[in-house]
Length: 259
Image (cartoon, rainbow, N blue to C red):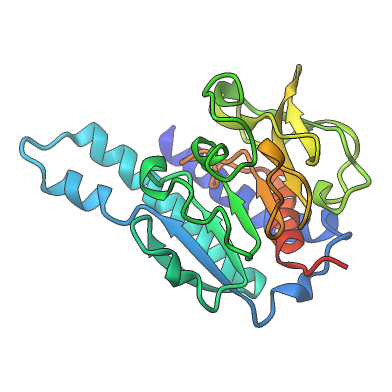
């Protein structure tokens, strides 16, 4: 049964690479060419767990899933045409030199990254909602300004004309292969553009963005484009074509210079 589910995930991901190209017609795929993504993730937890005594097989299996999702996402980004430079969460902010886009994985420790990239004038996408407050993209209170909901599968597209909506129709979209996944959300400031919310939870934004110069939380101004996306540590491999289309649109939009 596990093997069948795994094959299903792989097949959907492969199909999604084609389907997302058609769905995300409002963003320019050529923008990826020649651009470098700085992919920030945790690159030590798995090794430490494998070396721990006594060994915790469940912990190791969980971290292997996180690592596999990070690796698959990096491969996918390269498939879009980006160059990708992977760095650990502990890397200093100086490693952003030469990067055109920063992506912060959900595998990072929020305390390690915190506000490291807050003032960086490089577009940024975060999957880790625990740093939304540090980035001034939302408030600081967990479960009120940001959070994670269990048993999620759908998002509600509330801004279909926007390029970040990937050409999907307004309303409910099925973005994950089943309903047993976590989904991150945040409550952005008034200067944000909300693209999608959790189904039945209009105050919980699954995808939202700030244009460069837009007012974020606490009247801070966005130093470059900023995007919050709903991915959890184990959900990249579980994205349906619609979810991949939304992620593709987020990456390409963020990497596109504002007009």
